[in-house]
Image (cartoon, rainbow, N blue to C red; front, side):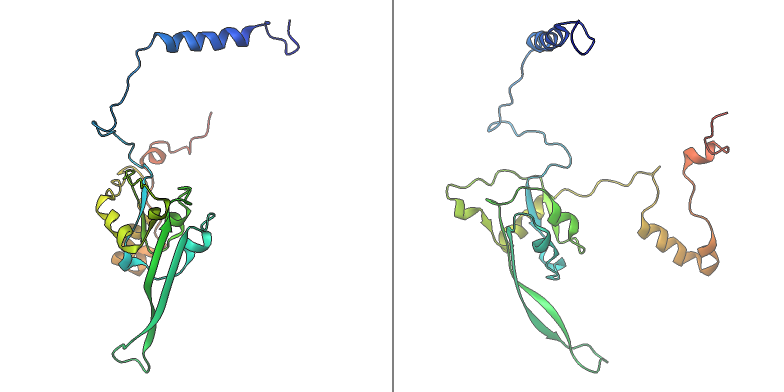
Length: 196
């Protein structure tokens, strides 16, 4: 008996069983350059920029653990009809991502409050010179054509907060006190799922 109470050599036998099982399977090689691989739906390839959504809030650059996002902007006055004085807005001058430093964590995509950054499944952007991995805003904007559409909403799931807010506004003030939609599996069990 071993010190853990099991049969001596049991771990070795389990490991060899896995090896034998793998040895009997036929291996398949993907012919990558000639045959395009089928990527999973949410693959992380390159980060794309939708420039008109960027408000230069700098959240992506501040939250980036690698500090590989470089942003520069200037302020511009915008005359608003009926306003006492003109307003100011930030105009994006430079938005660069250095993909030689990027670790593809996706924090910049997640923290962007205005949906200016997206994941594209494109992964073929290797360069001969490391300096060419610094993509500017025009290059990042070209990747937007490869961004897949968002997945369809699950019809059995809870409605999004935008749909709920729009439905409440359309229904009027009396609907604000009404309860939210009950999920189908909760309605089928009136006892609340308690075991008897």
